[in-house]
Image 1: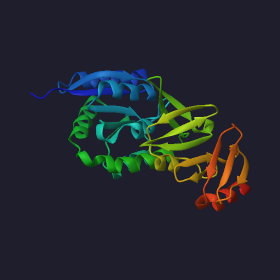
Image 2: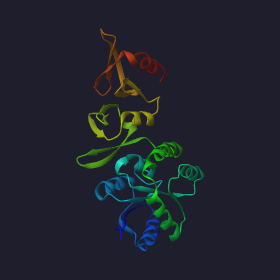
Image 3: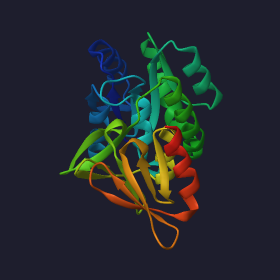
Length: 251
């Protein structure tokens, strides 16, 4: 007999967690390994416990379920069942891309049925999932936030506090005042989440919050020095010069 599926329950409502647990413990194919009440705790639990399936509330404190799902590594991402109150937009999105979901209120049979469907999904489900997550994040107007690991603990950084960002390997370094932190997310992904009017590129691998620019100084080779209000000095390359200066003038 195959081992039971390791299941993580994530919802900020205790009664919902109780209902999910009650349905799952009655199924011999499920082993509930943890319960979480906020999104950051879910990420930490996934790193530590490696569940096979996560019942993930769409809207939770600290990080939403949508943000949690975007942060899980594609190669190690568990099967996800989004738990949501009735939201026609979300349901249409999930149905369109055959993504597993559970609408509140639910019954025990529905929980067990969706558990088995989630596990049976083909391995390439990550492609439509990424597209759907982006659409849902815009729909529920989630603030842009980054998840960094600082002193071996995951921390949430609000994009509103970020001064500039530069690429580091497969991720980026976000700079806030005199502090910086590494974020495991590609630059192109971060650029797509930031509002154009707030940030602009000075290099292919560097973005700056326009409001932090104090002064520009031309260099002999056509580049510019960019002095920030935080004291940092960056370089604006010729390839981005015209667009960057135009953006500064209209902000």
